[in-house]
Length: 276
Image 1 (cartoon, rainbow, N blue to C red):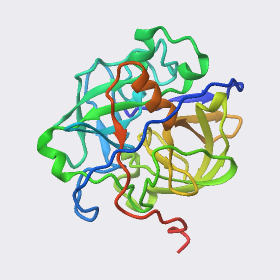
Image 2 (image 1 turned 60 degrees about the horizontal axis):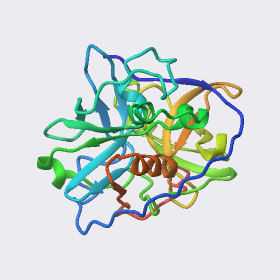
Image 3 (image 1 turned 90 degrees about the vertical axis):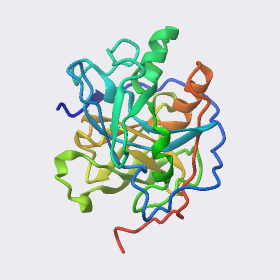
Image 4 (image 1 turned 30 degrees about the vertical axis):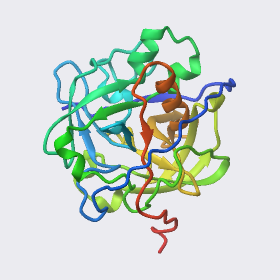
């Protein structure tokens, strides 16, 4: 299967703003120690028309529905360098998605790419960086879900900001690591917000690789910062672009997507785990 990957050159700053929805409050999740579905599991679309393997980010709820996030480009049908969500091809809503730890496939329930194309979005920053999708989980798997990010815990808040020089944390699950879980947790630094706040350039050890796309990023306090979207080839090779999750979710809710809210982690945020 094809592993989803994108490449991007940093663009200019343009201002834009969205308000994020509140976090979801769910009384009971599976224990984090035994849950098989959580941020960081692999998501796979095995279609002759596109898709590939990525990493899930945050858990969301809307009524009785439970979703897990991925990057919109993980359902892309074009070449790896087709990164403009306002014109890049995508598999349709309803496409089956294999979710690691789930007993049944989920379904693609929202795509920022498909939504931006449907509404005729023209903001170049949104087109470049609004890279977010939701997978609706089968109800049979709801009891297997926990929203905590492995190793780090959290998220402790549904939206976050990141100034230049602040620490960031993530958990990737690329198949290229051949199951070496020790390489999954990542710690690094943010270069702040760019392109009107739609993206956060970051540098982590180790950097995100193909298959890590979609990974959840937390800020220095454990708040939800964004979704790993791109591998950057310039000006800092090996760095990554993180799509701002607050803006992506607000855009979804403002344009007819699921009225979904992020579920906070049941485990406390723990920074400095790798150093310890």
